[in-house]
Amino acid sequence: MADGAILVVFLLFAVAAPLVLYALVRAEHDQREEMSREEAERVARRDTDDER
Image (cartoon, rainbow, N blue to C red; front, side, top):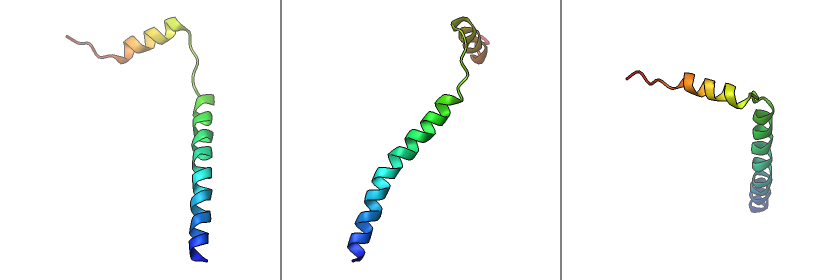
């Protein structure tokens, strides 16, 4: 009986874990900030620290 319960818990985890990860990725995707190419390039240049 305990073996069956462990199997059921494992199968539930195997099905639920990818769904939770998918939901987390979708939530992160929905919160992203969209910008134009020029703005993205300006932000990327500002993030680099090229003080030579």
